[in-house]
Image (cartoon, rainbow, N blue to C red; front, side, top):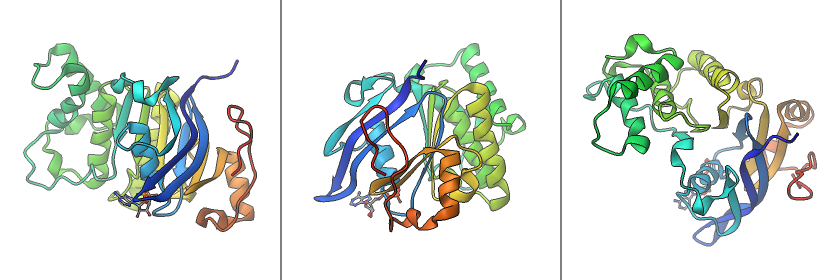
Length: 259
Ligand code: ADP
């Protein structure tokens, strides 16, 4: 039986000021996948994520989330999002880890509602899931970049999303902690079954952890499983920079995939 697709991107194009930054992108992300969305700086990764989240309107094409047209998709709490700028609280910021993670409940609770014991329990569980229980009552600003980023994952997890999208989450995280950070993501994917989309230009580290890779540079240069991608990298690294166009995989939904 085929696994249902969580995200379907169908002939998507996007323009800023009349210039195409994404052109004719089609691929799907199955339930349970851990997708690495890779490509050089300025290749359109963040723009694609903004289109998925409904923050930008594609100039052409369609997106389906959980089988529904993106424009009619209402179940926002099914999707967690962690942006690259999340981990930048300075040391004086007056909020505890518990408080920051609690704000992740607003999509379910609405603003300014009081939390009951079960909400508090959900916050604690989310902090535990990212291995940060001992920091629950600490001020967020006292934590390192990598620790703050874990807390932002907990904030996204607290509404129990089925899909978690992370845009360059390791910016500001020191190299030593990047690997353990990816291990955390792998655990969330394997143990909690959360579908993950990880935007990164760190192709080397991520290809060990992800199940699928999509490589963008305005066009979709590659989409397939991580093994195929690694094999390709051994032959030709220049594809990341868009010098070559490769035909690698076939997208069963949209006829041929021209990557
Ligand atoms: P990436 O996330 O891969 O670094 P982006 O999606 O941020 O790439 O950017 C893709 C292209 O769109 C780049 O050329 C960038 O300069 C341009 N761009 C991004 N945001 C805007 C904007 N708000 N207005 C105009 N151009 C933009």
